[in-house]
Length: 252
Image (tube, rainbow, N blue to C red; front, side):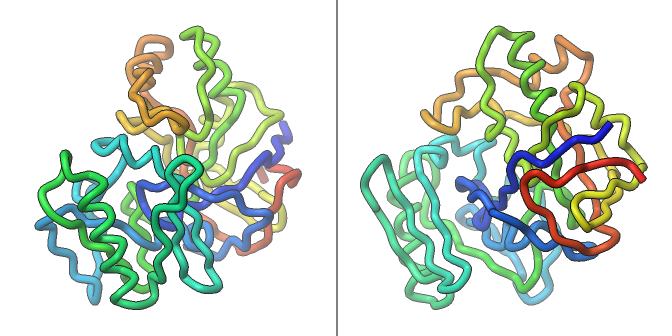
């Protein structure tokens, strides 16, 4: 079975919309470049950026609790560290995340944007090469588009694969066949990864990425249809390499 990459995505700011990458360099033991580099800590949450440790997503602004985040289109420029937020067709914020003034602008904006949901400004966090991932490990997430399609068919709805916030979306593989890769090594482009965990889905996937409405209950649909709430897998990069859309994915 040779699957192939359809799309590569990263999410520079945890909880905000991702970006499509034309290619990516996978480094051993690292995430997709820039993935969850920043996070917005909930008001009152203390995080030591000098000695970062993994913390649960409930400590940060995230779709699992803050569905209004999906109303925003976030555009991040790696070269300038500039974050642009758009609400519909309107640019509502442009800020330089490399300096304290720009970070304060982001915090003030979200305090106002989510005034009915949070009590005070969040804290924009960055901690070296720490990734504010949902998992206590530096991994890449893989999403089988055929599994997404099978879920949609089961519930009679068009399920947008962006709900699953994956890094590598792939096709040309039977639905759910990604679970057979558990504990196996895969060649992806010129890189090698080792699949180490199925991805359990939470209420964040219920949020429509276009409307910000909680219009589906996908964990319940997965449990009802297949007896589990998993979709996608996590993998650790064990040999570095370059990946791009069209590259093959296969066990080795």
